[in-house]
Length: 217
Picture 1: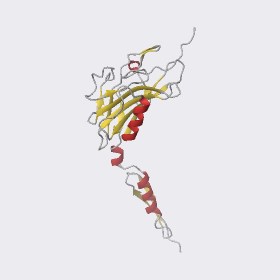
Picture 2: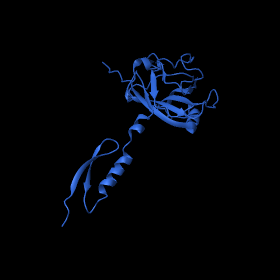
Picture 3: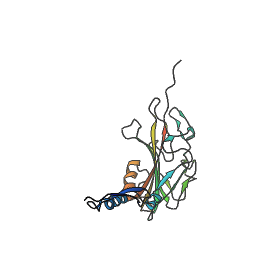
C-alpha cells in the first residue's frame, strides 16, 4: 500500500521557506531542493559585502540636475561634479579609480566625461564640485586624466538636442595597485585598459539626461 505523502515547510539559508515533500519513493527530493536553493540564493554576508556607488545628487537611473550639466556646446549648466560616496571596498584594494562615460554619444566610441585615478584606497567619498580642473578638492595623489573635452577634470552632460536621454555611467574601480603607470596625457581608452588589468571589483551608478526640442509656435 502506498504511503501517505507529507508536506513540510522548511526554511532555507536565505530565510525563504520552501515546501519539502517526504515520501517513501523520493526521500531525497526535499533535500536536493533545499541544497539547490541554498546554492542559488545569495547569503547575507555576500549581499552585505557588495561594492556600492551612490550620490546625494541623483538616484540610480534618475535624472541628472542642471547643476551637473556642462556649460558650453549650447548647454547652460554649472558643470559641477556630483557628490559621490561608496561602501563595500574589498580587502586588498590599493587604490581606486573613477570614470564617467556616455555610451550614447554619437561618436562611434561614446564620450568620456571624467577619468580619475590613483585615489587612495581609504577614500570614501568625493564632495560636490571635486572635479574642478585644478584638482584642489581631490585627495592627495589623485590624478585627473584628459577626457574627451580635451582636458582633465569633470565635464558634464550635454547631449544633442532631441536625442533620447543619454546614460551617464559613473564607475568606481577597486584596484590592486597603488598607482597606475600611465603617461600624463594618456587617452581614456588606454587608462581603461590598465584599470581592467588590475581591477578587483567595480560598482556603477547611472544618471540620465536629455535635451528636448523646443516646440515652434
